[in-house]
Length: 217
Image (cartoon, rainbow, N blue to C red; front, side):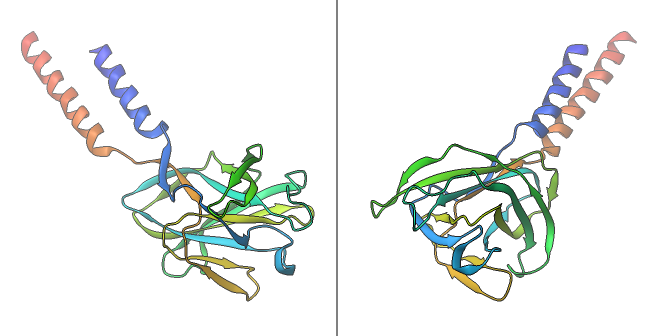
C-alpha cells in the first residue's frame, strides 16, 4: 500500500512540475525589424504583442522571447552589456492594447548571442530572453503576450518572425501602433493540470482500500 501511495505522490508531482512549451510559435525565418527595446525610431518603450490561444486551462511558469541584436552602426550589434530587465504582460484577447491581466518586470536569463541567417541570407546575432519561476493560472481562451526589454543605453534589439501568417502588434505605448503579418517568435512555458488522471488514480486507491478491508474481514 505504501508503494502505491508513493506512486500517487509521484504522479501528482509529475503533473505539476514537468514544464514544457504550451505554445510555440515556431522557428525564426527572418528579422521583423520591429524594435522591442530602447533606441528604435526615437522611443524608449517599444513593445511587441503576440496573440496566443490556451486550448485548456494552463499553469504558466515562464516565457521565452527571441530578439536579434540589430544596430546600424555595428553589424555585430552592441550586445547585452547594457541589459537591465524584461517586462511582460498578458492581455485579454479582446484588445491587444488593453489593460494587462498579469504583468511583471524581471531580469531574464539570457543566452550567449548566436548567429542567425535569415531566408534572405542576412546574418544577425540572436539572444534568448528566458523568464521563469512564474505561477500564473490561466483559463482557456485567447490572449495577447506583450514584451519589452530594458537597457541602460540605446540598444536596437528587434523581434524575429516565422513564416506563419498571424498578425502581431508593435507599439511605443505613446500613440504609434503598427502590425506585422507574420507570427512573432515566442514560447509560453508551463504545465497542463491533469485532474482527470489523478482522480482516476485516486479512485483506484479507494477501490484497493475497500478490497483489502474486505479480505481482512
